Amino acid sequence: MTNYTGRCLCGAITYNVAGPPVVVAQCHCDECRRTSGTGHAIGAMFAADSLTFTGTMGEFKYQSRTGSEVTKCFCGDCGSPILGRNTHTPDHVTLALGAMDDATKLRVEVVIFERDKQAWDSLGDNVMTFDTQPDWKPPN
Ligand SMILES: [Zn+2]
Ligand SMILES: [Zn+2]
Image 1 (tube, rainbow, N blue to C red):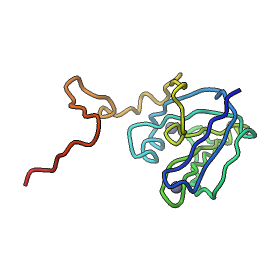
Image 2 (spheres, rainbow, N blue to C red; image 1 turned 90 degrees about the horizontal axis):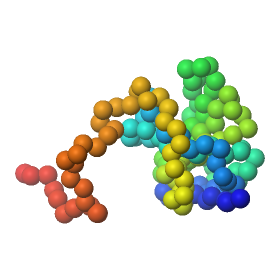
Image 3 (tube, rainbow, N blue to C red; image 1 turned 120 degrees about the vertical axis):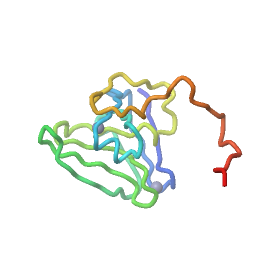
């Protein structure tokens, strides 16, 4: 059994959870797109009773398209997405992979809401890439 730790950007929220995750999923749904600020969210599902965390998370609830209630939990100070709960799977939580300290051994196993994937959420063949932030400013 491997334990995974994570934290938000500012460090107000930290967590520890016992793995391995049930599944690692990439989701392109409208809600994940908006709360992530990018084209998709990647989440790892764990047993809810194996999670401990420090700090107080902000919450936002909405109805899913199948009628269950989804709760997105985030750091109220820095805004980092931390985890999601769904009344359809009340014994599990889905942790945002980007907040995990070391997820190098985890891989996406399934993609959901592929139909909602945005065209801009794929890289073309001739996109320039840089190892770090380049020394660049918009032309005057
Ligand atoms: Zn924070
Ligand atoms: Zn989603």
